[in-house]
Structure formats: structure tokens, C-alpha cells
Length: 172
Image 1 (cartoon, helix red, strand yellow):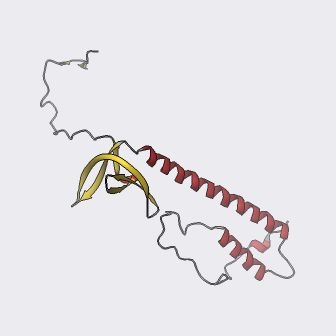
Image 2 (cartoon, helix red, strand yellow; image 1 turned 45 degrees about the vertical axis):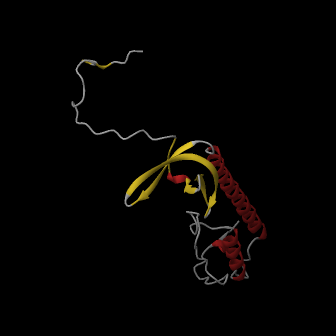
Image 3 (cartoon, helix red, strand yellow; image 1 turned 90 degrees about the vertical axis):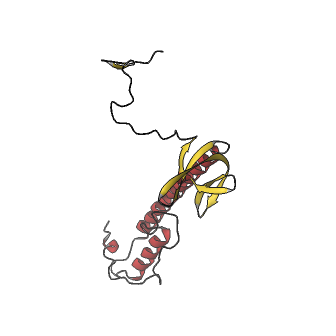
């Protein structure tokens, strides 16, 4: 079957009226893909600009609509699973101790506390430590981070007694 009607859309301008502009979204892929509305806009443009001697095949268009619907459904399910996984993870932190990192004056301040609840803020999952709210990506560790050790040069601070030629051994 000849699909020449699906050829060049470069001559079509402003077929749906306005151009969509992505603003204020938490979706990192926003504006980078086509959705069902875009597909229908292209289909209407194709019908409006088809050659009368080479009319579009309705069965081909129906197949494409079904395929686009399936892709849209799979995308929606994938998004729901991802959101559900993030919410489940956040909920699993309730009652656990976490270390959160907050940048203050160019340095990371470590905040340690017990997660008292979870929620969403601006479309992103957050946890509550007492009355304060933190994004999940600010969690540095579940539990307390180990204290920072003073850096020593190799050979300094090591005793000769515990070392052998094979290295240090730990008695079990």
C-alpha cells in the first residue's frame, strides 16, 4: 500500500491554531515528545491537505490511531508505576532515621532526624523531619553518616605491632 500521503508536512503551518509552550512542569521530558493531541493535529492537517486523486486510507489511519493509543496507555502506566514506586519508598522511610544534606553558605549542613511523614510539594515527593520538609533527593543516608575522620598521611598513625608483611590481620 502506498503511504505517500504521510510524506512532507513542511508546508503545513499553524494548523491547530497555537503552538504549545512548556512552562512550569516537573516532567524533565516535557516538550520533547508527541502526545495524542499532537498526533490528532497532524492527522487533521493531513486530511485538510490531502490530494483528491490520492486520498488517505481510513484503515491505515485507524491502525495508526490504535497504535498511538496503545503507546499512550503504556506511557501512562509506566508513569504511574514510577510515581507509585517513589511514593512507596518515601512511605517506607516513616519512622526511620535519616541524614539530610542542606546547602547553607556553600557548605553542606547535615541534618539528622526521624521521618515523621511524607507528602508532595510542587509535584515532587518530600519527607518531614519534625516541622521541616525536605525533598527525597536531599537524603544523604538512611541512618546517621559516620563522623568525618581526620586525614592522615600514609605511614602516620600506624603501629608496627599489628602489621605483618602480608598486611593487617583481624582476629575472629
